[in-house]
Amino acid sequence: MRYDCADEETRQTGIDAAQGVLESGELVVVPTDTVYGLAADAFSPEAVQRLLDAKGRTRQMPPPVLVGAPTTLEALATDVPGWLRSMTTELWPGPLTIICRQQPSLTWDLGETHHTVAVRMPDHPVALTLLKQTGPLAVSSANLTGEPAAVTVDDAERMLGDAVAVYLDAGSSPGGTASTILDVTGSSPRILREGPVTLDVLHRYNNTVEPFGA
Image (cartoon, rainbow, N blue to C red):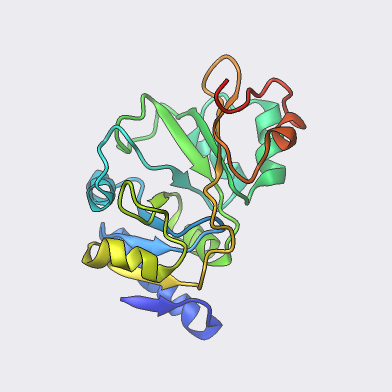
């Protein structure tokens, strides 16, 4: 089922439908500020496996988790330093994914994460409204592995088809570029993927952040 979320009158209907299918373990395509995402209930191992299967990914490539508020980071990650708290408070919502050590109490199965979790808060009203209704979601780009990321619902539907129960359509993605990925699990934070948030911006919060490829 496809819902027009550019129309405020039908947006909430679509978001409510998406919440319902996510709670039943099915998949949803949702717009974000970067590219369209393929979403599943992060706390349902079966739903996460369904997401990986739909994309053609293995458990060695676990999906990131999207959240609806910066404060949720500390519920998912352990040992969050003050500089990272400041960074996410000021740069979230936005195109920045943080890889952290996950809270040991979490009872989810995202794949072979090695006790880490990649977390982001997207800057898109449809995604944020959905996340505030559902809580954290496992979300990967809405495309088949090896194919370009989907910047429209048409792109996503062409690749994922009936594997997805609900498509939330908000037009073309405003960003079109995947997020910057910052890994803070090692002795020094380092960029794993370059994106809209640059090294210069990250250095405002921690000048030891290592550039991509270092």
